[in-house]
Amino acid sequence: MPRPTRTTRVSENIAKRIQRRISTGKLTAGQKLPAEREMARRYSTSRVSVREAYRSLEELGVLVIRRGAEGGAFIAEPGHTAVQRSLSLVLRLGRTSHQELTEARLLIEPPIARLAARRAHPEDIARLKLVLERQEAALARKGHFRPHSLLFHRAVAQCARNLPLTTLMNSLADLTLEVVSAIDTPRAVKEDICEFHRAIFEAIERHDEDAAYQLMLQHIGHVQEGIGETLAQQLRVAGNGGRRPSVRKAGARRAGRPRSVCP
Image 1: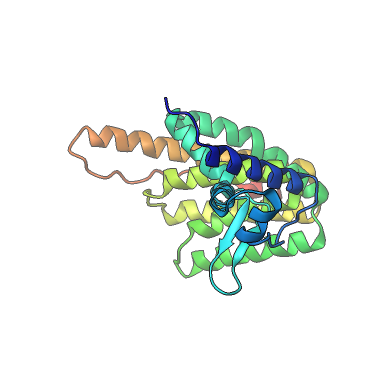
Image 2: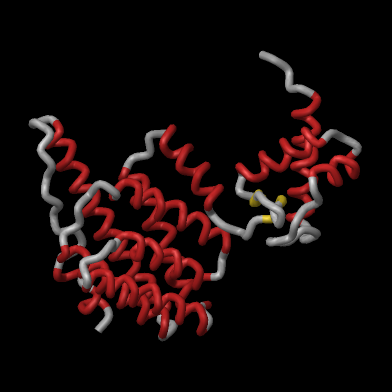
């Protein structure tokens, strides 16, 4: 196995020093780093090493590299993109099952909803309401529905004001979206999803932690169960000529609809 070059070792050291300055608060989101030439002078190294350090941090989602006269290397805003990308790869390599993804969402999202009901500020609730109204409008005009549904879960996580939980929840939600991207969702299912989202929003708005928890628990359970049934149908049909199955009504059990849980 070839030994790492000196340039690689130096660039890794530069990257670690930049990350350390970010973690200690000496570098903050949006701040522009020195140009490659200036950074190379500071560390008594080559521009190639600095460039490699910047590129590696960009791949991790730590930096944003912008081109042009006003460009440069900027500290990225905290987000889940890099974590989601890494987590997606790990889960795909590990052939994560739908059941495992369901278990993870059931363990993580209901407590997030509880925290959201406890901690949501007025501006958080206003943002969540806007996302919900856009989702309901998309349903009414038969528009693209899934992005709004995903944004609702992200907005709930933002209400919880816990970055690690938000990052993890967003990653799981994005993975779920990948799974369902090829599934046609019947209108009745979309209506159920909107009803659950409306009930969850109202629980968070009135800071009812128990209702938010229970509603999210039922919502995730119903949606994931429906996805699992659909995937199972697709596997069965694939062995019988490849005809595409119709999607069963996921999450539409009348006993579990939001209005029966949260009058």
